[in-house]
Image (cartoon, rainbow, N blue to C red; front, side, top):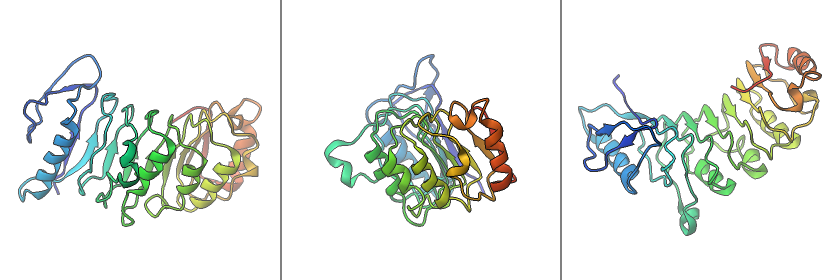
Length: 252
């Protein structure tokens, strides 16, 4: 089955004519978007989805496009969304009705890393806008303002309750009690977890971790779990609770 992907990585996109060719010109700076260009891209995606002969748009990668500030409603065919390094901002008075992912029933992977302008409440509303039918497998919230309320909600939301890959690197508010909730809620599905740089965490890892039978990789760099004096203790804990897992004293 044919699929379409739109990838824009540190490029300048011409907004003069936005059609299925999506004319692009390279530059050395960040991605330059006209105010309505992202909406036009989504309109293009919708036209792709409705065209009988066109493949559906499944991957949208706008990595490090710092001028992406708004997120309109995205097409239902989307499976992978990468907005790392964007500048998404709270839609203000429209926040409670903001639901850009409400038709993304096939969404599997989402990267929001580095979106530091978007508050935790807005991040939570964004995740809640995913339809219940969606089954997100990978979520990256590294270097965001994700707080306790958002992180505790992850195992409870239907769309994120079966995550296999979760990156929370450099989430400064992540504490042991919250990580314990996340680990217990995702204990039967979690395969890869990155908590590097979460400096509020306190050793030992054994006090908060349940059995994690599917865990393969645990990144603990720049945390108390990964210090030279604690990494061996963390690894011994994993041998008991997660026999398949490797503890990495870095990030993923």
